[in-house]
Amino acid sequence: MAGHVPTVTEVRLRFNGRGRPSLVTIGLHDIRYLDGAIRLRNESVARVNTLIFRRKPGPPKMDITVASVKRKDAGSNFWQNLMGGLKGTTANLFLKPIAVEPVGNEAMLNFGLALASEAPAFTFPHARNLKAGGIGSAREAIASN
Image (cartoon, rainbow, N blue to C red; front, side):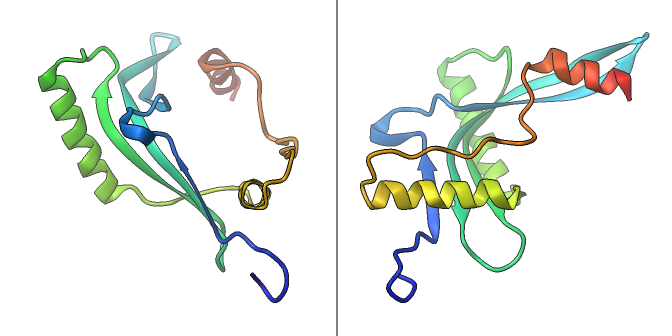
């Protein structure tokens, strides 16, 4: 409560609940311009455990924790999972919070308030910098610059 107004100061999105691994991943790769074409190199996948949004002074940031970091083509055997988990644990020691747009941070905190107050519905604001498409769109944007 801030005075008599309900307020949410932290929203923690946890993707690895109930003993299940997270299905949320982040693709990581280097982008190189080689022989007149953009090429992806060193492709890896980070499995995301949590995203954390907070209300605090200063520019808004999002904390991320990952469960594992593995090469994109890595298998799912004991050794690959063990090494991916060790890399994830190490990555969490060095991951710094990522700057996010104030409107996005506020939307996540308002979403948390809607959940806490058991609101029957919540509508996220339209993201002004959302772009349709995947890596192909990114390649086109890089090539045009």
